Image (cartoon, rainbow, N blue to C red; front, side, top):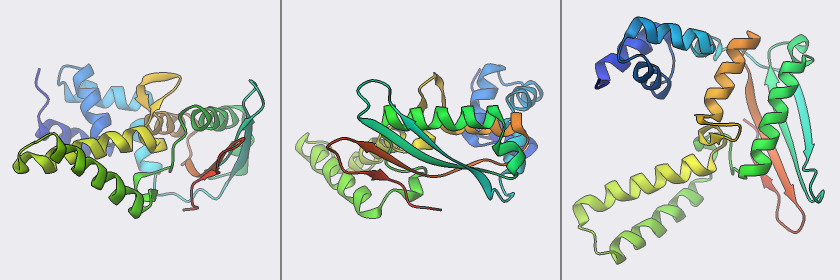
Length: 206
């Protein structure tokens, strides 16, 4: 069944979930909005969106050293609302998963808004040069460049990356599921990835 924009909007209005999460839920339920609501609730995503505006000022800084060779490490700050949740095994397991994601996938920022503007412009310039060298018509060049930039964000922005333990979901989806499970707003604030012989990959604080 074709999932229309109006169906996605209806589900978003009912749950507050993100567009991609709504579309995926509707696809899973063959366009049944009520069943899609249940899917999002079961995953904790609907609840997560309602908690997103709440202050998350507690949390932990988790450190991870890759066991093979000991030449790769990550520090990541993960915030929640209370010190009680910060001390739970589930919260620590989430922080560990995020640190392992950063170690494996080397993101450059938590969110796409955090990617330096000059870096985005440099990527766009490279893509434009590629498109022009391929002889693509001007009227579709911008669309191709936009598509390449979207792929760049999905590969390099932490929340948009495929989750290494389950590539059917993104890190953002895993975050929302964890928010639903733990019942508090959770935020990945910043990280630093260290590899022997390389410059530090570091995300600025929100």
